[in-house]
Length: 233
Image (cartoon, rainbow, N blue to C red; front, side, top):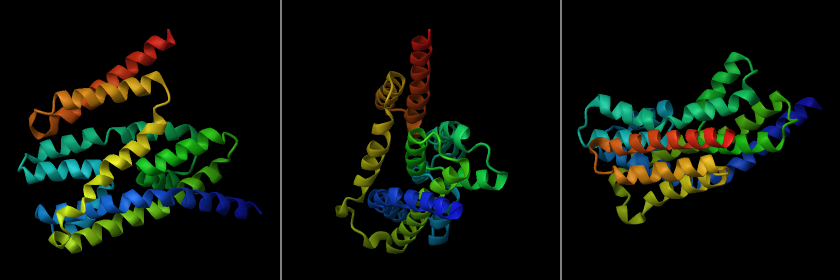
């Protein structure tokens, strides 16, 4: 019976994650196409997605590589875009931090925007959920997402320039992030951080090598932290 309940949690996570494939796969296709156009071969493109597994950071690094930016700049910019992953990890610790090391390693690898959004909402809504069920729910959200990202990247890389730009695959990026972020803007600190980060990134878009993104990210975190501090007084 216990094993049945665990698998029920897994399949619930699996089903919850399926709708994300509607935007994830076009997003991965676009990355595969642009990566090969930028000069990466199919193996390098697929390895990029498997190792990094962070769409926004991958696109940032790819753009900078295409502009012949220094490798250090590309790495720092990609890390800045991915700083949210550290916050995701901290948010998951109260729910999954007691798991064995190997399970935490799996969670760390699969902790992407979609799995975090689903797991965070589920765990907050079900505080009584046992930690083992949480793990299997999280694993269920990852199973369709990661292969979908890999396969989409591979198909995009194989297709390369045969996919015309008129298909407008780039619609997936803004839609995916709006769908993920909007439900999370629950507090004034969240909304203030998001708004200030957006305005700063746009205001500093003239900076070379996408440094405007780093300015926006750091500024947004500072504003969010200050709002939380003042509300806590």
